Length: 151
Image (spheres, rainbow, N blue to C red):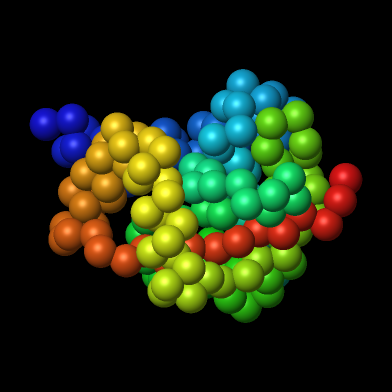
């Protein structure tokens, strides 16, 4: 029941885009350090695009790992493939230049394993919502390391 509600919310544009307004008005700190806003460039339009993502881990102060719950077909993921330069807003940091690096399957599995261990309930809810939204079991998910370049 909760998974189906969460999966519907993940497919509701107004719901998933609501945090973007807060980040763009420098109120992203309300989400703490477990969520970020990623600004990327549309591969066809060349226009700025925005998405809010959950942080899987922070290997260092200037590195953030995020996961594409909707796989390699997610627009933000495809846009970063075309142009890995991006901007990240997280906590009190806004619009920090960053560069995306796509993790290998092994690196992704290890990062997701660490996330599962650190946040078992969050992982269970997130995985259930993703599986309900995509209609199949989630095994491996593409993962991206965002290297912050400074303020």
